[in-house]
Image (cartoon, rainbow, N blue to C red; front, side):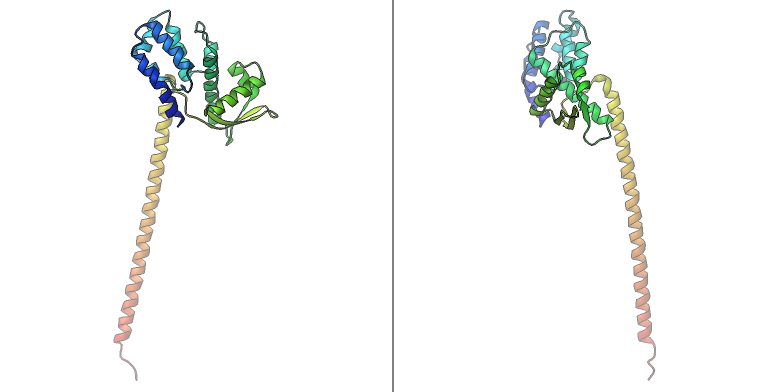
Length: 235
């Protein structure tokens, strides 16, 4: 649902990219797309020739880098990369929201708890937020936007994460790891299927043996009954 809404929100910008034939127009399109409501997935826009052409423009190449950060980077990526365009308020909020998703996903992979928790201090630092209140407002905005399900726990100074929407693009550098994970998962599935098949074969074989024993007993009983019937009766 969230992915469909995000992809639909990006559609107008994909259509406009065809007419963004100058670097300035492509850069302006990036600003508009990253500022618009509900646009959280940017891979398709990144792959358009007009946007990719910015790589050869010294003046507008930073806009390509900016879109890459919105696609699969974090707020820390933005603050640690010099020469990037200044963010407007809508972009700043969105990039922090997207970064929160990444941090929540990362924590859920490493945590053994069913509902992982992120502490206020680390989130404030990672998202460059000035206060606890600013962090709480950001989390609430992400919840209302449907980006994640979470509860604030001010007493323990943690954000309890319940679920995270799949609204982050995969970084090119992570594709090999993703493929390796998928291959490992496929291998586990194959092993499970082989184990189930072996168990089913054992069950069938045991059922066949039971059926054979039952048939043998029935045949033996039948023969005994016939023999009893044929035996001479003593008067």
